[in-house]
Length: 288
Image (cartoon, rainbow, N blue to C red; front, side):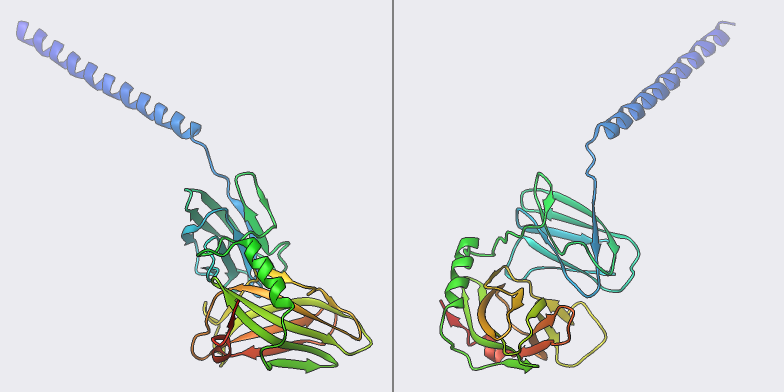
């Protein structure tokens, strides 16, 4: 009888231990759930990108890590610049995906990407307050934004040092007058001339590296070089006039079997011009 009573007490003790363990586990789960609820969430930015244009993301600090959710998007840091990420669709109409960027200050930026034919903006600057389209480059070494602007204006007013390359059609001319380099920034001096009686409105003035032979599109086949500063008017060329502009780009060289293409497209028109710059011309850039 006593033995049976002792067994019953032992069983009750074991049952109590199990109940206490269950209660502690439930309490722990509730505590963990509460911690998760209390954790600060980081809402993602909604970002639209397209196939034929590059979207630029400008961060307040250097980019340290990039993770893309799908191979359907192409990403790269702008050459010679630490805080600008360039994003482009690798194929039209890709399924929704994501992108994560970590910056040198420990900042975490999360994006949900969707495809569109016509993005509302192509450049975004991110900071602790919000996002607005105003680029502010952080260069890899010691070039500053003010220095780049001053050098571009200096280049704009220099005499010609390069003979060509150029392209002319329907009395519209685009001509390379000079190429310069300083502190990891390349400066292209361009002559834009309109000998016709009709004003020329510029839709786009692009610099991009292309393959000499057309192949199936890859991440390397066409790379847009985004200007960090432009000195002069690249919006329009008045009739019977000419103007010189200077375009500042992060330093780069042109790989074998590729070339730099400069393309000027007319808004609502067909007077489109294009010229090629080879690496042997690029590496002869003058110094400032």
